[in-house]
View (cartoon, rainbow, N blue to C red):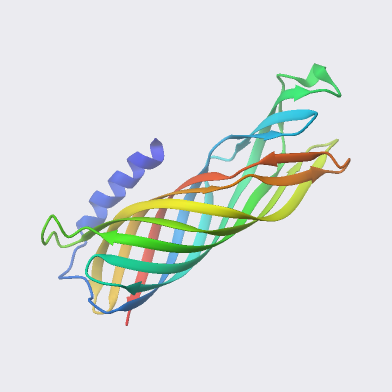
Amino acid sequence: MRFVSAATAAVIAASALTIGTLPANAAYLGLRGSLVETDDDNSTSVSIDYTQKYDDVGFATGIYLGWVLDEDFRFEAAVDYRNNDLDSIHIIRNDFDNSTEGNTYRVDGQAEAVALMGNFFYDIHAFGDLGFLPWVGAGVGGAYIRYSANQPTTFAQDEAWVFAYQLMAGITVPLADHLSGSVGYRWFQTRDFKYADQYGLVFKTDLTQQSIDLGLQLHF
């Protein structure tokens, strides 16, 4: 919820920067930086289940190429790198040592993802000339996940390609001729992926993230 509140404040602030009208060119190249919050999630196996908690804030960066399909719709091809460090794990079930159940342990490790996404956007013109352009979007693609969790006595890691999808909303504001800025909110999720510890025990989890995105677009 704090990310939703931050997104609202960012949209209000960005609207004050409005200059003229948005560039009408048919294509654009953009760069994006993001603050990322990763949801707590469960890792499950045949013998051990635990909940992993991530640091409060991670980061993401991306590059994207967009095409204006018509007045209302745009398509983007995007590549993003996303990273959030692990903070702790909470043991739910441990068939090897049930004395650890209910305990929380600090851990090192991280979840990294390189996401290749195709995104469709709907530009909302229904409100008339606001001086900025609201939009909503959805995307699908694949994410290459590198996951690791390190404790003094255990080490788990793996790499995998998984299906990924996302929902987005925000605004675009003109900054100069052929240049615009954007601020938005993004919800990103992957399907389950698997990783193994040093004993060969296989775990399954997914990656769910929310982010505040700041973008800069060059229109041509």
